[in-house]
Image 1 (cartoon, rainbow over the protein chains, first blue to last red):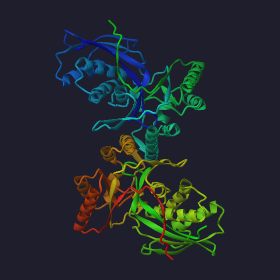
Image 2: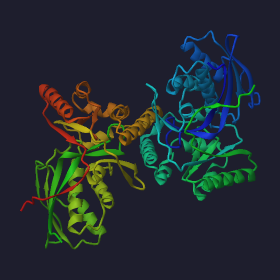
Image 3: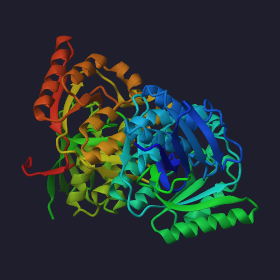
Image 4: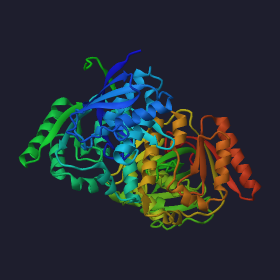
Length: 315
Length: 315
């Protein structure tokens, strides 16, 4: 049995515009890394966090990585095991790209690996959701599910939990922009009304059905037409600088669709080839820079793998 | 060019439980028949209606069949043509099985046929929706779309109108019961609240996505789990006698799912083989008869064809 492992877990785009709280996909990059080793000292310990600018707690009860790993050990009756965790944040926090989810998934995957893989990825999911509850105040699964399972995931039901992997059309490319403004997930959730018009909900589930059909048939135009959101986007986009201008730029540059990643402020566009994806990324970045807003910009494909074991271990 | 034609158009199950106003499927039986002939007398005339117990209007402006055919002729600039219509109602009115939709679709299909098929089925759809608006006070498409296009249809969007045929899993069987109580569509729609809880809507679009995924993968258990409705059914089922008992009977007899067809009072169950479908049908019928409620009972498969030309023409 190995006594140490490094794991990368991917960032994710939750909601996929029309599928609030039920859909999400994993990215090739960015993501987070966890180094974990079995130690003689019992208990779960965060020994180092890098790349977080001091924003994440080292207290093992409060850090979502250690807290979810502790819950896993407890459920498996392995609380006597000692684990030391190094968390390397390689992606922005509070970006709407599932930062806490990527760390949590990397940690759970690493711990499960070091224990000899007693649980499947699907079985790890409830522990990852517990981590999200700690991080965001609500145990949603639309970031942890794609980060853990890879690809495009549908949370068909929360009670009981049922997650389905949807097909990933081959030519789907993602352009991602994280504008440097602060939109805490907790606040972004609070803005959303508890009641929605039935007419709007009917429109939304028509689009969700269209998106799922488009994914199964690799119908990119249908995917684009279906990824619209008349319920959540109008509220959340208020917090995102230049949202309408960015949308216009993306669509003028052949994006299939453009919208908010998770609760924002990151935004993303889908397209069908790498050159278009890069062009959209550059156009959006150029506009934001022009109006004085810094950003991280990425292109990626949908990541079919989920977490991956790293071969180059930090010593 | 033919100068007369007989057309059968199928009854339909709208909503498919979780897909209010967007999903529906066509049945092999029951359905309605229209006999239509070109006449020297200009204008569209209803010359006979049978099987309606005198409930349907003969006035060509008020009858949905003639009114939609008139709109079609007008749009095609063929108002000089005379058409005589015999409508044979072979299915109950006010049943929640798309009775008006079946008649309207049969009429439009017949008229288009006699004109040399200037329009495709998809192009006939807006005229059928106009007929629904006349019949029910709301131009919904979840009955006319499957009656006209056959199979299982998704109305992805109303504005602009976009209808998609979803795959029909091979072993899907339908048990149908129309209890003899009156639930007018207009009233059934009025009962539904204009605002719904976001939590309930999220559950609903998770189920809609699960159903579409189940249809693409012929995953019958997933189809069954996904066909639940926590928003509309609790309100509408109040009007349907013995609803909860019937549901229990259906599920105990191996139904994948059980729910309301359209706005009711008809109810339906899905199962995966003809013997089970017949057994469910008989068990439901037996229960209703036992408590003194008459009903029509059917078994059917999903009808992939939509309207069909009849070879035995009435003279």
